[in-house]
Image 1 (cartoon, helix red, strand yellow):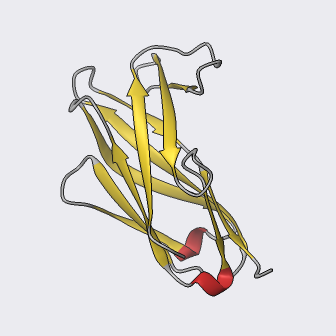
Image 2: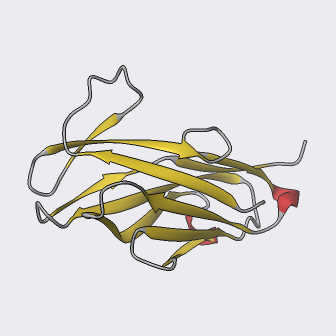
Image 3: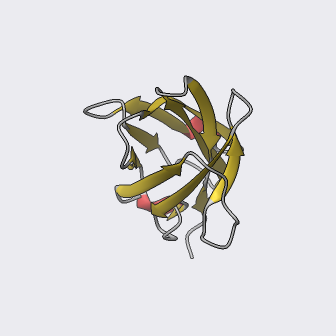
Length: 132
């Protein structure tokens, strides 16, 4: 797997859905919207082939400094292959995929709004595909 960069743009308001943003509910029961860019699909998702080997996905929350990443969680049948750590600051999460077997997994970036004192999840997929 090559090293992949992903951007995460946050709005503290709901989206109509026509602009590519996805709505999510915060821990304070308010609606935020988010949009991923980059990855292998241009939408924050990552597809890799098993022969690609391990690599990283660097997710950066852009724009407003009130948004930080306190946690990243994983699910799916490849979740045991995924781990994460902060980058040079808490607006960057570096996800490592060991890519040892095929399957689907999902990463959910938990974003903290330091101004509103709440958190909310944002989640695109990771797919480890068999070699073609």
